[in-house]
Structures are given as C-alpha cells and as structure tokens.
Amino acid sequence: MSILGTLADGAFIALQGLTGALSAYQVGVSLFGYRKPKDTITHAPKKSFAIFVAAHNEAEVIEPLIENLHQLEYPRELYDIFVICDNCTDNTAEIVRNANALAFERFDDTKRGKGYAIEWMLERLWEQEKKYDAVVMFDADNLAAKDFLVHMNEKLMNGDKVIQGYLGTKNPNDTWITASYAISYCIANRTWQFARYNLGLANALGGTGICIDADLLKEMGWGAHSLTEDVEFTARCVERGIYPTWAHNAKVFDEKPHTMRASWRQRLRWMQGHFDCASRYFWPLMGKSIKNRNWAMLDAALYLFQPMRVLIILFTTIILYLQWMMPSWWAITDIQDVMLPTPYWVVINIFLYAQLPLSMILEKAHWKSYLYLPIFPIFLLTWFPITLFAYFTKNNKKWSHTEHTRAIRLDELSN
Image 1 (cartoon, one colour):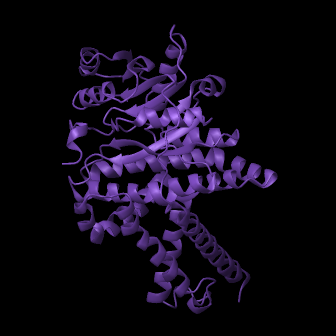
Image 2 (image 1 turned 30 degrees about the vertical axis):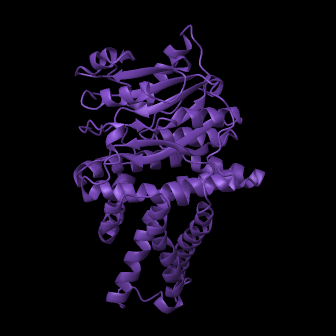
C-alpha cells in the first residue's frame, strides 16, 4: 500500500472514530435527561427584572407578547418591559407605547442585528435611575408562561447568574416544518439541556427566554455581535468559568417558520454564526479544559464542534456509499476493516431515534406531533446541505430577519 493510501486510510478511520465517539458521548449524556424535573419554589418574589424584547418590524406580533408580559404572575413593580425597536420601518414603536411598554427606537445602518441592538439597549439601561437585579430577553414573536419570572427569581436567589428557560413552539401544528421544529425542541430540551443541567455542565443559551444577572452583565459586557449572539455569549461565559444553567419550568414559546425556504434561511444563519463562534472559541475552550481538567469546558467546546461533526458524518457517509457502489473507485480502505462496524452504528441510531417518542411523551407533546414522526427524518436530512453551505459562507455577517405574522395569544396555545 502506498504512503498516500496509508494516510487516506488513517484519516478516514480517525474521522469515523471521532464521530462514533462523539455520538456515543451524546447518547450517554442524554440518559441523564429522563429524571423527573423538580418544581419547587422556596423564595418569594424579590429580584427585579428589566425585560428586553428585540423587535425589527414586528407590528403583527408584538402586541400579544406585551399583553402577555403585563399578565405575568409576578409583582408588577418588580419588572419593566423595554422594547428595542431596531431599525423599524413600520409602526412597532407606536403599538408598543399604546400597549404601555417602553419603546426605545434605534437606527443604525452599519451595526445591524440583534447582538448590537442588545448592547445598545444595555448602555441605556445602565443610565436609568431605576436599577434592576437581572435582564430577561425575549424575541418579539414569543409568549412566556405566566410563572416565568417566578422560576427565574428562584434561580437567581439560589445564586445562578445566567439562566436559559425552556424553549417551546407556539405553532407546532401549522405545517410539517413547524411540527419538525417542535419535535426537535422536545428532544433538545430533554436530552441536551436538561441532561446537562443534571450533570452540572453548562447549558446552551437559545437566543430567547434568557435571564442574566445585571451585575455580571455590567462586569463582562455583552460583547456578542455574531449572527448567533446566544452561542457567542455562552462561550464567553464558559471561558470565564461561568456556566449557564437551565430552568425547565420557566417556559417560553417561539413562533417557527412555516416553509422550507424560511426555515432554510433561519437555520443557515444559525450555522453560519455557529461556525464563526467555533473559529474563535473552540480552541481556547479546549485548551482550558485540558489545562484545568474541566469537563464543563470540554463539553462546551464539543457543542461548538457540532456543525463540523455534521460535515464529517456527511463526508464519511458519502465515502462509504461510493465504496459500496463502486469498489474500484477507492480500494485502499476495505469496508469490512473500518474502525467502527455496522452494528455499532445500528445501536447508536436505535438509541437516538428511540429518544424521539420518549422525549415527546415526557414533554406532553400535542398528539398531532406524533403524526409527523415518519417524515421527521426528512427535516433532519436537510441539516446536511444547510451546514455544508454555511461552512463555505461562514464569513457572512449580514443579519437575516425571520418574518413573523401569527398574532397568537397565550390562551390559544392549548387549542
């Protein structure tokens, strides 16, 4: 065998070994997500909150959210609603003021995007006479459970500094796309977020439903301007030894795109931003995790590696398929001698796919969601071209806005 063949063989086996190990790792971690969540409130409302709502031309959906926030089961004097009307060309600000919330209008053609808008609003918040214990962040299309701040108050009183709430979908039954998002969130909430919370690892911030201690924000600043400001701020926190935690009972409901085109644009932005953050934070976190023998930092670094793992799986799958279809195309690797045999992958995939209905049952998913399980793999497969395209366009910094049009209210979610 030639040197080139030996190197190609070794690289292929190494890539398979890497993806196999990471898949097994995630399966092992996910098993800790099946405990029963505790719902114990021991502290009376004490913490004060500045609620930020990032809005860009959200006239169609902003009023139900503000109405929802006014009705939270928390002392009204302990929270205020600040809506960042970011480069709006509609009447979002007018609707916000008519709904008795504070509208702050921002116009900046160069620093566009949610991350810049949040940083701009924080500068104005620190100038306010009234001081707050924490900042909560929602998107304009969200709805929050009425006890959301009760659970965040509990977490803050227990000493947590950065908290991610439970992310649900407010329109799961609109199309097969929204149903696929809903299924994905059930799995992520249980097998990723709740599992890591139970293990004491860092949770990943999800862009909305976030609560951050005000003093911590003043100390470290926001500093997250990428297309995925949540991923970036998570990395910045973990790098400093601050591990975001999880509030399983603090629920926020997010509107999801109806069409594949809109979903593609949204997920492409997520992957572009994720690649960007990984390029800046993966190696520093890996280095610190090894130096300090810190599992939480290692796990956070592996989270940043996830898009690259998707590409490696795509690459190795294509190679194996070509070997099977055209053995003479690449004869240097014998399929029977690959590092991880087929039974290994069968077992891994059985575990992964078994988590779909199990997570849905535990999270009490709507019965209609189960009807979409047979076509859910199609949605999963679309991540491959999206991630591949994102890799080659990862330097894109242009914010892509997801339009929202469903004015759903909290009491309609169960219907």
